[in-house]
Length: 387
Ligand code: PLP
Image (cartoon, rainbow, N blue to C red):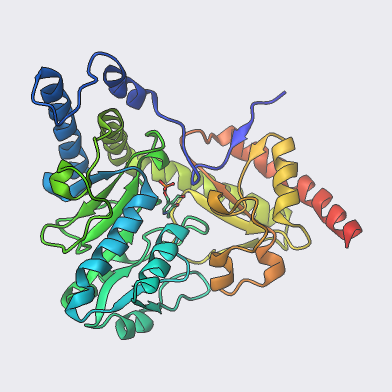
């Protein structure tokens, strides 16, 4: 039996051996609590400080601008609710976002609304790109925080974050970007780019699940989400996860160093897969095809199929893909992202996201290109007979 093929790197990635090695001492002798004053504590503090410095340098940030979090979801919640709560008494009641954000952002915005915020949604075009006129109209001086994701996790669309952040800064609006899918794919430099808050997550770049970071530009008003000890200057109380912070720093450095070469490799593989599939299945629809897209995501619908049956058929054939974001799997509602970009419901219900990464080889892509058309023919027959 052929090796199974993992095409779900946007959901999560395997922990890199370099990351595992870097973390190992902290599951052994170096188990100290960074807040303790004795030698174990001091060693843990030094490792944590160094990890923070290394992550900062990957983002062009100062060390005190990095707050380690438990995941991307926490970073998004902290950024949006923290910025809204800090600004609400200062005549800025509005929270701005797009309809194609990850649920971590959309649900945070909805919670801000429960607390009294006014939500304003930006318009996106059929590729999922923010409509610039809408942005310029909506981002006004009554806005507490504006959150726009850098790369969309379902369709791969890239937003022009540096330009959007410049406008927000000129209008005194705190600008947050969810960079969970862009970290390691698009260069990030807080010295040259004007975002105030930026979320990253470890498990998308070869670190374990359970670690991420929020970049918080110096001077950005932000209320903490949790209350307790004085860790991370009181921004995020709780004993720090030293091992995972060290692992995350290693993964971040590798992602930055390998960014250009890996993006070129993945982009070529994604384009080859897309070309083959469009040739072999002429009525297949590639979502956001003409957008500027990150190199690791391909989202495709074959008319007359449905995502769940096709995913199962792919799984039986040894190919792991997804119908959208992992959190939506098992949920039969069509993707909110595809709906927001105007995809007809029957096409949205057939969407398959294939996301490439470290485990993706030329051979794997050739095999999927060969397998996929036969599976879609079978899925079309199944859907046809059950209709
Ligand atoms: N934002 C985006 C764009 C994502 O793709 C994800 C995860 O899929 C998240 C946020 C949430 O990250 P985490 O799984 O680390 O909570």
